[in-house]
Image (cartoon, rainbow, N blue to C red):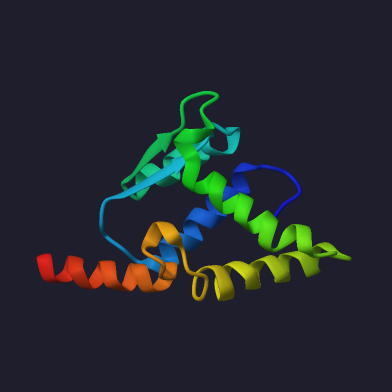
Amino acid sequence: MSDRLETELVTKALKQALYNRKTNKDLMFHSDRGTQYTSNEFKELANRHGITLSMSAKGRCYDNAVAESFFHTLKTEEVHLSNYRIREEAKTSIFEYVEIFYNRKRLHSTLGYVSPIDFEAAWNCTAERVI
């Protein structure tokens, strides 16, 4: 979490995702056209890992609807209901919301009313059977 949109934040997040997921599958990273995503450093990192970059068309928030929906939900269910006293409290609370509740327990209508963790596990089982 940062108080500014910067390349370092998104490159660290991508490195963390690559480390945690350890996948060799073809990957695509979709984002808006923020300067942190169009920076040479970020593009080079993605290229080194064979990641295809995809960006929304200028002024088309619907191209990034999944991310927009996530942030709306985060604000509605967590941020606007909380009164954080310090940044660390906000970081901890938002981390717990995303990692403990949103990804593991919250049912998502677009995923057939299962959690993202359960959806991904089922997807991986199906993909392994196909291969």
